[in-house]
Amino acid sequence: MTDTTAPATAAETTVCDVCGEPPTDENRLKGGAHVRYCYQWRRRNDPTRPKCPTPDCGRFARSGKSPLCDRCYQRDQRGNDPAARPFHGRNEGACKVEWCTNPARRKGWCSTCAAWSTRNNGADPVDRRYRYARTVEDLVALVRTIEPDPVTGCRDGGALFWTNRDGYPITTVQGVQRTQTVTRIVLAHTLDRPLKRARQACHTCDNPPCVEASHLWEGTSADNMRDRDTKGRGARGVTNGRSRLDPENVRAIRARYVLGNNQHESNVAALAAEFGVKPQAIRDVVHRRTWAHVE
Image 1 (cartoon, one colour):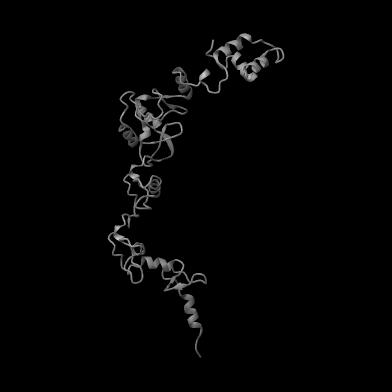
Image 2 (image 1 turned 45 degrees about the vertical axis):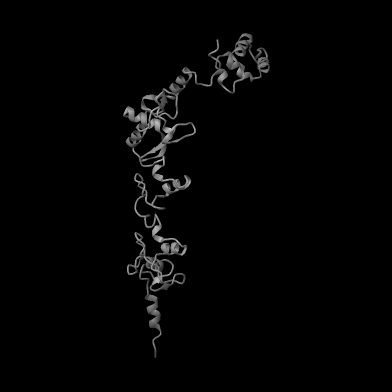
């Protein structure tokens, strides 16, 4: 009598040559390897398969009559020379941009550099202004390459760095993911210490894109506002676009104001209706909370 259990036992003990796992109903064996992953992996990485003859390609040839790899074969089918691909086989190792250390993903560039090139109509990412791996010394050296204005002496950082909505150049420093203003980086390097907490990099030239070290000084927000008011650059009095009064109105309000114990005894409401402002604006003018510079 023939033993019918032996083949079944042998089939059950057959495992994948790649991962060593037995087959399942959803992932059967094909040529000794699982059809879902291992078979294709071995097909792509079989050391006995010939290499693609395209120079500098290095990939395995397709199975079949064509000696080319899959990519070169597809390019050849479109009527193009596979050897003319400028980025063939170069997505290995680091990005080809010399200062970038990210792994290559597209055309020999990393994902960030390739995306920058796409956004800028195919420009070379080596020239992009927004770099991620520069040290403070590299940034300061880059700032010094900017030619100063012959009249004002300002170095315009907008030519090399991105600028925020206020016009200040911004960048990143190696090891710090958040963006920083270039003026703050340059001033800290000049002082040879980090800027103190709640301190700002203020300009003597009042030019936001300027990154000249001699035009920067450390101060608080109040110091910066005081410097602005001293130079007459603040929106004060009639220069404030939201102001509804002028110096003559202010003097008239203070001269005609009648003090009272409540709103019925004082003439605040009448003055507010006459000058087209709210009663609180009349009180602020009288008590010099606003328009304090008008005598």
